[in-house]
Image (cartoon, rainbow, N blue to C red; front, side, top):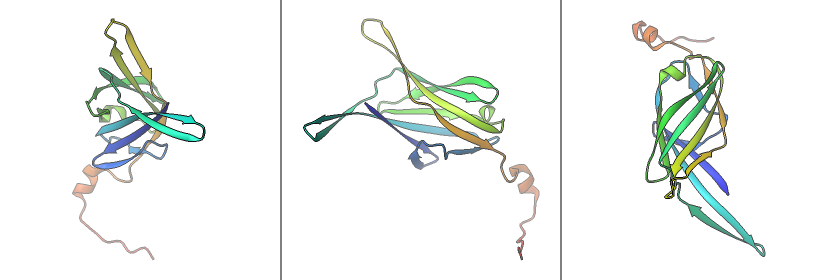
Length: 144
């Protein structure tokens, strides 16, 4: 089984990779699409079957340089996980890990938990403070 994760933030879509940059104090809504597919190879021919993600709920585990916490997430009917990363989780500069955990209960009452592979991202210091920038007059600086 191969998992593919597609991240949408503010209308921009991309695959999850270590290149994700978030800046100190940022707050944003994320939508992650999960595509489950099984690739079967028989005598040199491959067949791809897509399996819907059927989870009742999800949590986003966040490991910051200071420790681990989680964010509640919503699983939509179209294999998407939506959550908000508030500025509470972007205050510390450094490298973070994020992992999606899906939860469900089978018809017989058995609880199912599935951890997706983790990925890393970095929180950096922004090049300016919006509060400070709004009080500055607009100037053009020549770099010569």
